[in-house]
Length: 319
Image 1 (cartoon, rainbow, N blue to C red):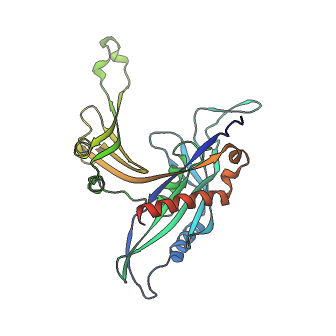
Image 2 (cartoon, rainbow, N blue to C red; image 1 turned 30 degrees about the vertical axis):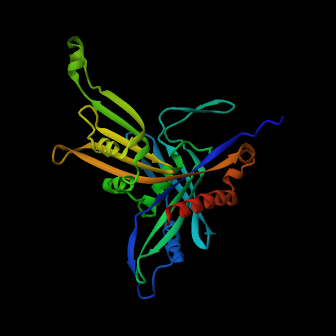
Image 3 (cartoon, helix red, strand yellow; image 1 turned 135 degrees about the horizontal axis):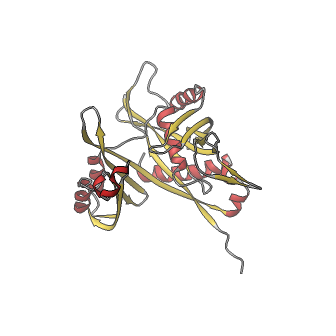
């Protein structure tokens, strides 16, 4: 009996950018091509590398180059971005081939095959008023670490192209979930840090410089009534924790809600920072042969997989 070929999953999360309200101008309403041309102009204006700090980490992420190719998907023009990015300021680690090489602080560790598709949407309210936005389709193939393409894609879209991925309000999420009697899956993670010199033995305190105590907790729920979900989502972090990360999974739709107590240094008080986003998690299969033959980074192969996921999304979510 022939052994079944091993297969993997390409993760294809889809994000929505913020929407813009428009009215017909002197030359009529904006077209898909004009939306894409605006992006091409921004990409072509990128003159140098852009570096970004990783929160609470020494490692830096650098976007070194953004190339694009134009494609038509269902008669709508779109852009496939190929982003070259690397990490630097790495203070620990090594690379080993024929010999072991310690990674230096100014060394670069990166990839030139980070792909992101940008697809324009125009929705008419009436004959003269309409909204426009983009769908951002990430291509996270099995050769990438979880979340790495999303991180790089968000930097390019939000910061270099200036089209922010939509942050939605908590009431909007709750309104969408209210139609469900039960929430299929709910995950909540809590994180806390505190500093307490009093926990150090008295005989050591004169030498004490600094320290911290960290605490975390993870809770998982299934088939929970909406009323209970709404209640637990609205609950504060609690005295022991400063951060609360909630994930609601409903089919291919995922909602992420983050609450964090942050210090307002100007007013010397804590403030609650709350963000939320909506992700549509699509996927596509890829075989070991396709990986071995490098089809995974072939643009025709990529467009085929992304087009399939995008078509599925558009038919399911009435864009």
